View 1 (tube, rainbow, N blue to C red):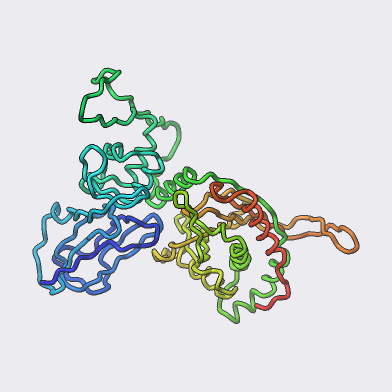
View 2: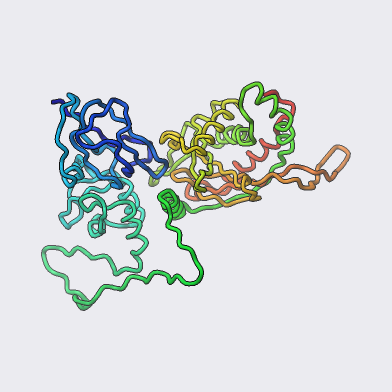
Length: 437
């Protein structure tokens, strides 16, 4: 019998855990190489996990809806293919303890005893990262109730704890073993009551957030708590771009089989400016600035459910207008049809959101962590503008668009943010209306 361990795959640089959505196989059933074994969900996208071996499934170590750290063994397969009896559900669901590693200050997996309480719980990097940012000590973390396997603390648990931390009684201090500490309050006094839920009355409908909406909500709250947001605004005259696209969109599609939208044209200018201002294309790790050499542009895209997702165009600065057009169209179509893969949403270094698609003139977007800036493109509107000519000033009807850049003021100062935004506007206005496609 040759037993093969199947582990939770790493779905991207920032993904440290995933939720089991559905098992496609049961203990005792056979499976082929690359056949789908289970569906998982990360805070980015749902994905299928194929089997890395062929044979018979002997163990399934996690239940549906369990949150599993990357690298943990999730199932075992007898590659010899011998039939096995199904194990009881309780045994099949018991997780394998993750390998013990040394904890560091920045969200590394911990399985060794932590704090002074003698505990031995596993904490995912995401949980440790949130705890570190909120100033939660390891001793206090040991007191957080966990709803995961074997009482593990999930992301939801730590976020709920943080949300209620201020309203709850003060964290229990771990007293030295040498001598007890005299308490100043009655030791049997009841803890401070939790705030009552808001009363709901009147003619209302209550809608439960779906899983994706909950993830988006958590991501947005964490971003605002992590980065001090500043937003700068400018406007650009995109008349040359509007007229050029109107002129070439038919021949372009006939020649290349791709519809050209404004998005790849804007991306072409944006990536050129990122190359001029590389400190926009960074992330922050503690007191270190990580400068990204690749320019991977995320484009916020609406899903059929109304939620947003951010697929990523990898190495956007190496692609011409046709290459950007193909990538934009392919990712947008995949998003609309729920066909995005996990890798499609990973590795972004800068994000663009087109609020103009929904009719907004401008917006103040929230940074897509761990990036440090996000650009919002407003609706293109005709407006009377004053133009300077050799014969004097004239008023003309122009196609105008507002641009807004939100940036992390920890590392992007106003001078850098405003200069970068102005450079994009200038690049759009300098578009050559006679260029070839």
